[in-house]
Length: 330
Image 1: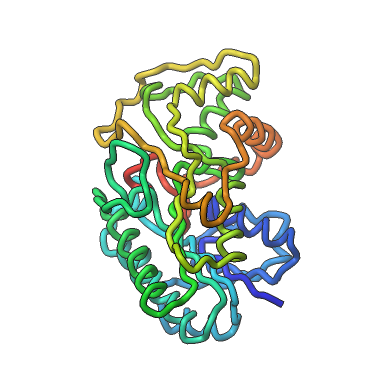
Image 2 (image 1 turned 90 degrees about the vertical axis):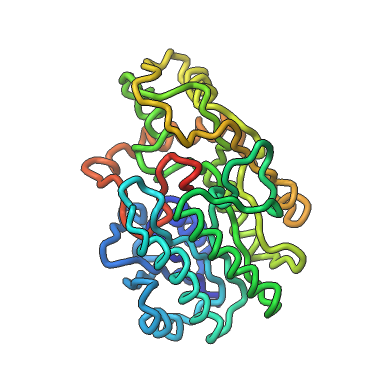
């Protein structure tokens, strides 16, 4: 039986990926730090094996790889995207050296596929759709560390001819996302008819539903393409915060109470932020299945039935792929 390892499996995207794997009744292992809460895995705990480890501890990582013998590795653990995660050393230790440690341990043991998680922030500011071959111009420590990890993985794929890939998620949303991020804020505000304090309706993102991103992870692992090794996970559409609010209003057929300008527009707010997804389509046959309206409707139903999961929750947990709503830090 194939064994799957998911680092950051207690985080937003990671937990959705773990749930997909559990549905397929495969052997799933998770790497999590001692501090991480496993609330997103509620209801499936008995179907996964959790290992508490810091990726910076190479000896422990190596021991666990030899013990678990994973054939497919989905690497989503990271640090530095939240506004209070400012420790520069930790940013590079976890995102770059942690990736190197994990990869080397897996390489020594052998694997079928290794999928790293990059970041759309690796591109920096662009004036059009971001393509995987664009020159990287990161403007944050987090983005630099992610870009370095991506380049390391690409080096191993090209030089060693190994099935090593990187997926660069854009603005992912859906079940289990932190309630402090934009879309959960709008959805929960709409459900509770609370006033929303938002910055500007003109701020743009490339919103992509989490199930579509999980599809890409699964397709990369199944197909293991030989010609391309980096893939954008976005919708390919640039939409605004105003578009989100309008779409939610259309779904609930009520007007959302929005106080625009209550939060200042951030100085790093981009004029454009959208992924080119042509490579994913041509190489993998992947296209996002959810429109913004479909993804928001599905998310709204989920949040309506799962609001209790967020009661008393911390804003974030360390060393997962959670990120602040800042495309430059993503």
